[in-house]
Image 1 (cartoon, rainbow, N blue to C red):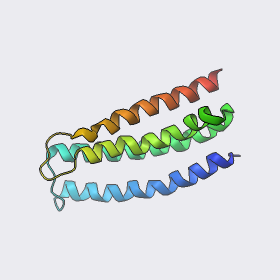
Image 2: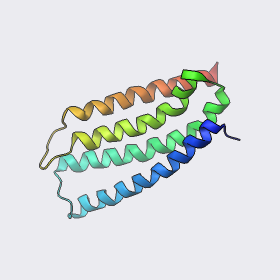
Image 3: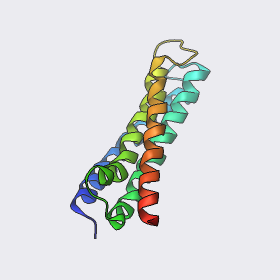
Length: 133
């Protein structure tokens, strides 16, 4: 049985996976030609799409573990929601840093990828340590 917090977050995450599906359709347009993109933009679209799907699934997987760890307050939300927020930050960094016609290099929004990676590491470390201790 999931806690109310995990159940609500899991519902949001499952609905969010629909956006990954939509992003996949855009990626098909890039690869097949109707949506023009540089090689750099195609690589970042692939990376953003892959990170979004994997991190949303990981965010779903951690929910019962967050409940089992018995964390509450800030540590509980870090363990429970941090992975979900990183699933927004990291793909967003790939997508937003590669936007613009003819772009060949990331813009300053690439920082979102690094912030998401930091949050992901903090969240997983919090949950992993809570389960071990």
